[in-house]
Image (cartoon, rainbow, N blue to C red; front, side, top):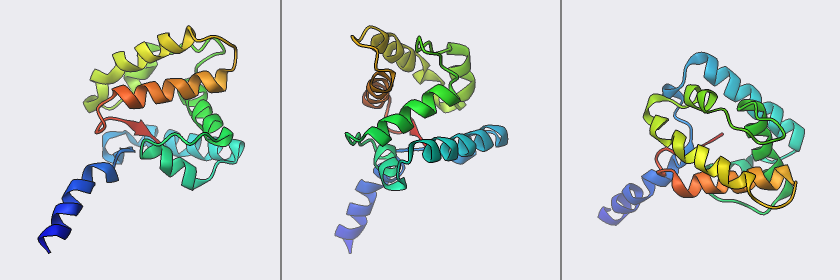
Amino acid sequence: MKHVIATILLCLPWLSYGMINRKDFSENQLERIDSIHQICKHTTGVSETLINQMIKGGFPEDLKAKRYSYCLWMVYMEMDDNLDLDVKHMWNFLPHIHKRDVHIYMQCNDEIKKLPGNDLVEKMWQMQKCAQGRVDPEHYLFF
C-alpha cells in the first residue's frame, strides 16, 4: 500500500502538466480558450489523444499536432505572419501565477524569428517546444 501511495504522489505533478487550471482564468478567458480549442481542433483535424500528449509535454512529430499549436498561437495570441508576440496580450492572457513566465515566451518568440526558412507552422512548433523546455512544469500551459 505504501508503494502505491508513493507512486501516486510521484505522479501527481505530471497529471496536471500543461493542463490549464480553470480557476486561474476569468470566465471570458475560459470561453475564449474553449472556443479556440474547438476551432483549432476542427480546423486541423488533430485528435484529443495528440492534444493530451502535448498537454503532458510531449511533442509528437505529427503535422496535425504542429498545425494545432500554430493555430492556438496565431488565433489566441493574435500573432501576424511576422510572428510578433504582443507582450501586453501575453501579459493579459497569463493568470497572475504565470506572469513571471512572460519573459520566457518573449525570448522564445525572438529566437524562432531568427530561424531559417519561412515555414511558420514549424517555427511556432519550435516556439512551443522552447517554452515547454524553459517554463516551470507547474506553469506550462497548453489546451
